[in-house]
Every structure is written in structure tokens, then in C-alpha cells.
Image 1 (cartoon, protein in one colour):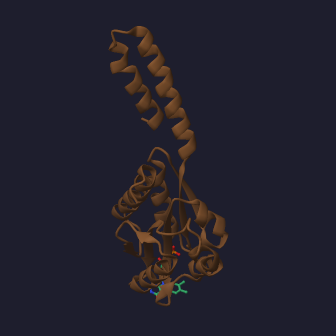
Image 2 (image 1 turned 120 degrees about the vertical axis):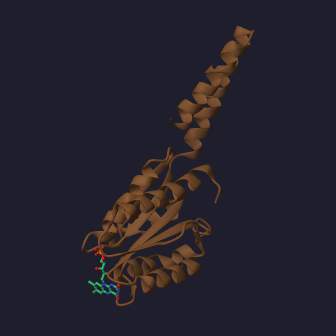
Image 3 (image 1 turned 90 degrees about the horizontal axis):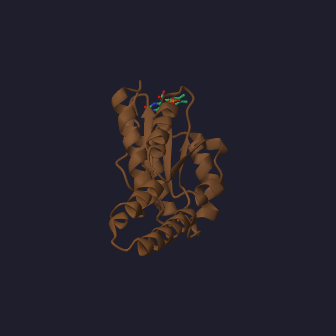
Length: 196
Ligand SMILES: Cc1cc2nc3c(=O)[nH]c(=O)nc-3n(C[C@H](O)[C@H](O)[C@H](O)COP(=O)(O)O)c2cc1C
């Protein structure tokens, strides 16, 4: 049920039992207008999912995170391969999910490139300050080097971690995908409700 229909049922519920039908009619119209204006002002909460993948594992995880985001009313998943993600994507989103393989004990060059292109302008922009973020990594056998390097850079951006990182090794299982969906739902629900 969307926020709109939820509120609509509120206004048509108890008020319809009012002993003053004319007053009830006016109140319904007033509440509906307030709700519509609020929904328009708030808009959709965009969650940017920036990822890199050559073999497809991180892409599967990114898609599952996007699924989780899209399952939340009022949230929109913006799925971008890292080389295509821009400063504007970063500044206009409410939250960001970063997904990377581990390459040579570090994050993928594509993710580092995204950070390199956006850091100078983003770090002093109040729209980036304490923005919620989450990380997922798929690696051949470890993944900790990629995770640590991403987390260190996110500190520089003054982003706020809101979900335990997911580090998966090799083949993607249904369990990993379920955790990725939960990750997407969590950051999206927090952004929509404004709790971060
Ligand atoms: C150039 C290169 C370097 C890699 N270095 C590491 C590494 O240091 N540690 C590790 O655990 N896996 C390493 N791997 C394996 C990848 O992290 C792993 O295959 C991962 O699943 C790739 O994700 P993808 O399927 O999304 O491309 C490396 C792979 C490549 C291509």
C-alpha cells in the first residue's frame, strides 16, 4: 500500500462515521490536499547503487540491492556501473550503496575512479554530509582489502554507514542475494522515513 492510499484510507475511515457529514466532507478534502502536497514536496528518495563487475557476481548483488530498494514505497533505485556514475548522481541521491570486487587486495579501479572524480566537489558540499551508505563486496577469496579501502574513503566523504557490509566469496548464493535485498530495503526505508 502506498503512502497515498494509506493516508486516503485514514481519511475515509473514522471521519466517515462523523455525526457532522458536512464537516466530515470538508475535512476529507483538506487532509487529501495536505497529503498530496506533502508527497509532491518530498518526492522519491533516490538510492544510488554504484558498482563494478566483470564476471557478473557484483552485478547480481547490485541488482538484488536495487530490488530491495524498489520494494520500499517512496524509494527509487538508481543503478550505475561506476564508470558511468557522476557527481550529480552522488549529490542528488538520499543514500548510496557501493559494490566492488577485490582486485589486488584493493577496491576495483572503477570504484576508485568514481571516488577520484567526485571527491573534491563532494566533500565540501552539504548535500553529501553524513549521507547514509552501505557496501557490498564479492571477491575470489578474501575481500577485506576492498572493504577497508572503500570504508576509509567513505570516512573522507563523511558518509555514515547504516548496514553491516556484505562480503561474499565466489559464487552468489540465494542467501547472499537475500541479504543484499535486505540491505537495499534498510537503507531505502531509513531514507524515506528520514531516520538517518
Ligand atoms: C585483476 C584481478 C585481481 C583480483 N584480485 C583479487 C584479490 O586480490 N583478492 C581476491 O579475493 N580476489 C581477487 N580477484 C578475484 C575477484 O575479486 C573475483 O573474481 C570477483 O568475484 C569478481 O567479481 P565480478 O564477478 O563482479 O567481476 C581478482 C580478479 C581480478 C580480475
